[in-house]
Length: 421
Image (cartoon, rainbow, N blue to C red; front, side, top):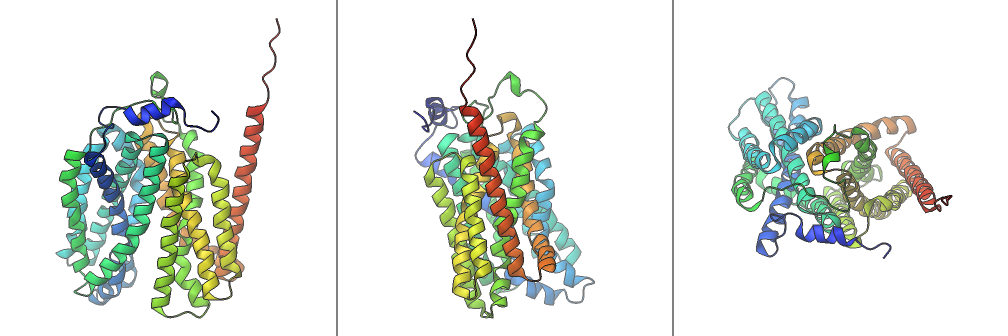
């Protein structure tokens, strides 16, 4: 039946290889561990944000403290973006589970290092090492989701990964602020949580095995070839742009509200929380749609563009929040759509490298987001104008993807030429 899931995909998804075909508590524990592991890089990104001013005061006599202290927050994400492709190569060579357990343990070692380090330079170095561990953890968790599941279940759990990451950002920010009231070092104790996760991962996560599914590149003799860089180039380029779109509201919302005269930090925090909830809602919606992600990308990008358009036209804070919510519903769907599209291009032997490349593209886009908006703002004269330009770019890209899909569909639907005797 057109549009239905092929029987082979369902059979593989349910049976796959023996370690994957589990249900009940064992399955729930496995999914919980993969989601918890996926949240560790988010913890690294936001946990210490509330204590940066206290760190600044503590190290005010250190040379370059004004520039170095903010690096304590951002350098893990930069390290993750740079090292994720290399982590992907190691994943394919050494195995997903082994690398995940080792780096989860190292995450606790590097993450808690600022509890006893007194040099700002040493703390920055430890934060860079946290980024190294995060690159491996995120790549391993995402690769394992691709290994364990296929078809609609893979879509569901990749969307759940996005939802958990978005929700955890808000939780970790609150935890960091509460713990930071007892001192700037106290939030770093939270990194020790990975010491609880590593033993559970060792016992509850099976070693995946290669298998062919109906929605991905077949596993077989033809996959024993050099990595297909061209297969991933387009989706990775699209992911860089998607990450810029994804992070625009979280990064720039407070500045946009300030431009409208809103200076109350409580109001700004509430607006950001509402936007974050919309991102979670978008991820949940994507998981429930049970459709192939590639055809959805033009519509999702168009929704993001519409949100940016409302934000540009907003003359007051409530309308700005409405635009942000529309945009964030779109970005909540955009991230799992991009990730699922990337996964569908990868065979088992290539999945680690491919996932690493995708992670590098996404976190590279995160790093570029404020720089791109700053450059566009300087060109057009306002941050709202820069948001409008980004929305226009998203709309044009959506139209281009839609046109390409229509052309491909028209070509595929043409009747085959009749054979001559």
